[in-house]
Image 1 (cartoon, rainbow over the protein chains, first blue to last red):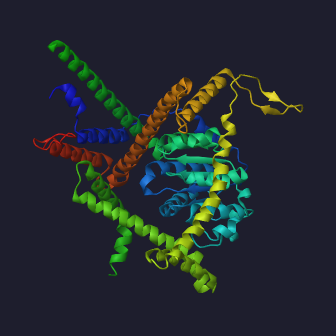
Image 2: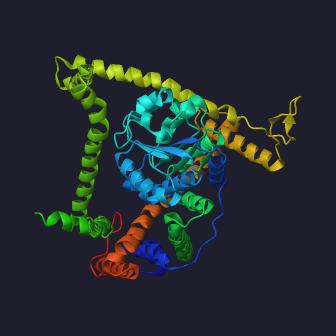
Image 3: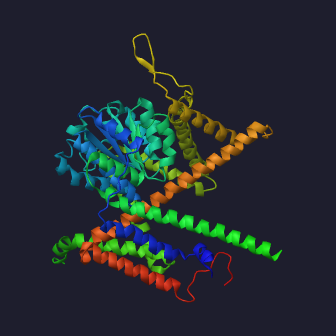
Length: 280
Length: 265
């Protein structure tokens, strides 16, 4: 088999092995590639910075273990920013795993920022029927949520003081690997024009750019790359920043392989054309 | 069994990272080829996720929202939720399936009504924001000096013209109601198709990025969470490299080469 043909028929397992090396080796390197902050990440950061102290933010977390690689660092970056600014926030999950995953995260971070469950943040827990729940939430928050994840009536919690309808929510944030953000736009953001930020997985991000352009979204954390940028803005080295170099190496490898495969194909075509010409 | 509980609480963190690592490696074994180990872990994962969903739906939703009010607080009217839900099963009865249709019709009505609001809040705001200024101008102010229209610079104007051209080309591609005989329309539709291809390419690139992020998370877990349990991240890195070498050896040994699509056995 000649080299040009070999380059187009590399065994996929050889590529997997190379990818594994490209992803794992950078964890042992101390190089940091500078990451410019994208406008949409900067816009979201600025919007949270501009919120008045003690504002109430709704942090939707609709992800599970399957999209942990992107959604966990996004959630952590947003949660750290909210805690750092001492803004009140409620976690709302339409995925059963998210309720537990975000609860663990918030409990881990709260002592670092001197905030307290029930006073600065609350976990409304796992809820079903996304659209009808949000429609009801707009009209009456305490009645719709009724109790937090621990079974405490939310109306009795200090964090919920002054929160009656969706009008009292100053900002909505949704961390999601799916289209749940559209339901927030359709039934909450659109109704009272509440500023809304989004943290989707990279695969979902292209669909969100329309909403950014129209102003329905004020900013966005685009996948792992966005999480790296946001970690920089908040000022800590987290899971996303640690993964940054691996991501760059893996992308470089894939781009190189695509170029190499296509180059080999073009050269082989030219070789065949010459052979045919020679025979004529 | 009195010894088990203290032992479990003492060893639980270690046990969990071991289970996580074994499951991760078991699931990734499919990269070599389809195998029983992969199938086993796939079924465990699906079973766990489904079981978790059912348990969480009961404890977080049905118990506090339905069972406790009905059973403990005597709000018997909640029983109708169960009755209405059970109506769906009449779909299997030829004689009484109208009862199922009743419920389906009711919920279709609810969903249709909701769609009106959804459309208004979702799509309408995007229509006026598509009308973008294409002529550069300074900021426009009213009599009180308040800015009513932001300044448009030359780069903004070029960007907006590009946006409008792309919008019109892509929209013209979707004129299916009549035959596109007009040369201008035909050309813009062709451009629209190409522009859509660019968008799909970008989406595909983003998809690769998302999948890589998931792989990186698992490798991070194996190196930095599980690694310390077997002597450190470097040891785990060595284990991963040995496993990769083994897979390569098995894959590339004579006679083990995968057939190309369409190649005869």
